[in-house]
Image (tube, rainbow, N blue to C red):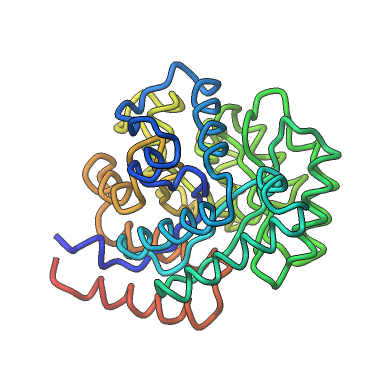
Length: 324
């Protein structure tokens, strides 16, 4: 079979703090690396995630985490990566929100140049912090449009925090030319995806797999070309799907929905993006043409420059031309 590591791909659904290597987490925290990736529910998972944010407590540590994330992406055949984070976590480290974002963008640019992987920053809103905090983050993200920030995200607890509450924040981001990449359709059903698309103007939906429960919505997503940034192992470990065999990615692709393949939180799920392509091949039954289509979608839907996209798309053509 064709080598999936050699397939050029963009990694579009990846949370910065949960890219940390096990050895790095152990070094920073002074505790053994995680060996279990099972969670009793989303609350336990989020608690584990917030724990990761507390150990990145200096500029040097943040720079290292970003550098290692981009280096690992390069090893998986990634040509473009969009690292999502909530910069307010680093305000105590850098003194202000703008200084934190400036540092994130600077470290990302350094890692991109070092490892040859285009790198952008997604400023991600924590839903549970409320609309006012969201608007503050969106306004800060807008100030860094064209300077390293490429999109506005929306993550954390989906239940009880609907997309409609964050319309002003996403309007601010869109006015600045940023991509709208909110989470939806993970813990809440198709109605969450519909709100993300219609009210937030989502260019891509992070997860979005529960769209499959509404055939009319699936048809609308396919017609509009809206991309779903899908993470199979994450969906399995957080109980969104009962098994990999039941994952809706093949059905969504068959219905014409554009999808990318992603790892979400490697530190907490024990997988990287290359592994997720292997899962899509071996557990979800996607053939190489479908995998190449997902890679094409990931590159095309990214915020990477045109030259990066053109080179990657040509290389995907070459990958398919190889003997399988």
